[in-house]
Length: 107
Ligand SMILES: [Zn+2]
Image (cartoon, rainbow, N blue to C red; front, side):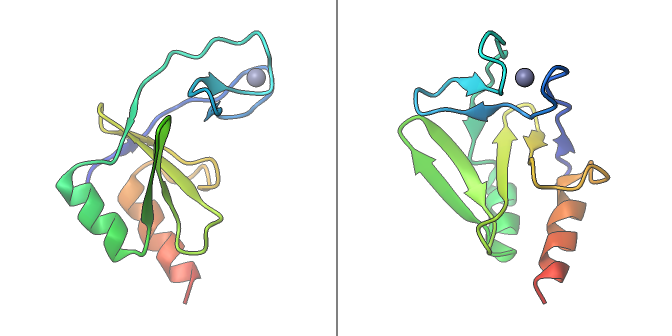
């Protein structure tokens, strides 16, 4: 797994964009337009690793993302091999390192 964190954050409100119920990416700023990349479930390798660490895939009509084992973490994976996770500490760039750290915290 060599996914690298996408650098997405609103300069005005400091938030990473989230998908709303209409499927659009939004932050706190009503007028902000986010370039939309469709999230994916990830490759077979991604799925195997995430499931190994206890993450669950959530598939909705307008969204797809992974939820952590204690449900306080959400991850988005993209076709360009990037990832986004608002609850992941900023020091984690590589997804594999974050997953390992997160799993250790659960023990
Ligand atoms: Zn904003």
